[in-house]
Each structure stands twice: as structure tokens, then as C-alpha cells.
Image (cartoon, rainbow, N blue to C red; front, side):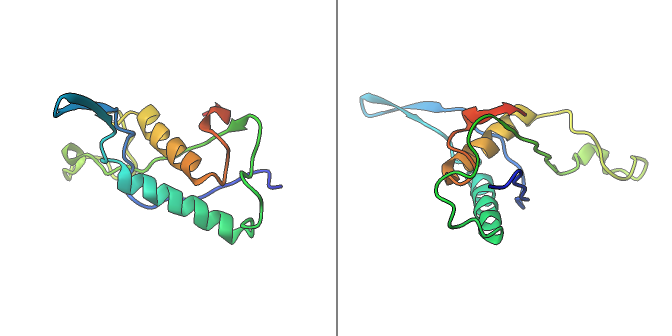
Length: 127
């Protein structure tokens, strides 16, 4: 059994949207907007591809059980307000929306949906 699992999902990170409610006919319907769908699909694909490349496709169920530690790094577009010639080059810390906890929630939910890394994101004890 592997001690660690690492992968890279290409695309623009999107936060997990909050559930919304809408009145349809005489009923209230709760739904989750699809704004993060493309990002979550990229994460799911990266996780499944990495599992296959590590020859773990024969491993039954989840790779890890018990408490886990998860490390995430997000690369976001540089804000337009920092694109001027006088602004510093290189990496700029992100201090606006989307919040890192909502970005992490989208990734953790996508990983949970794959059923190949863990059984449930409640196993993540350190983020």
C-alpha cells in the first residue's frame, strides 16, 4: 500500500458552490449550481489517471483508510489590477475570493466521488 498519493489537476480552480433553492411549480427544489463542474471533473480525471499510472488499478476500493493529511496548492490567475508594468513580477499571494476552504471543499468532494483515494473526506484530519 502506498504511503503517499500525489497528482496535479490542470485547469482553473473553482470553489465549491453553496446549495441553492428554487421554486418550481408549487415545490421548492434544492440544487447545487454547476459552476465548479469542469474543475471537479479535472480533479477526478487527474486522480484516476495517477492511480492508473501507479499500477494501483487492481487495488480494491480506496487506497487509504484511517486519518489522513491533505496538502493542496492552488494556482490562480493573476488579478487584473496587478498587471501593470510597475507591479512586481512572479507569484502574488491570493487574498481575495475564492476562499481557500471553498477551493479545498471542491477538491475533497471530487476526490471522494472517485472512490479511489479515500472512502470519505471526513478521513482528512490535517489540511
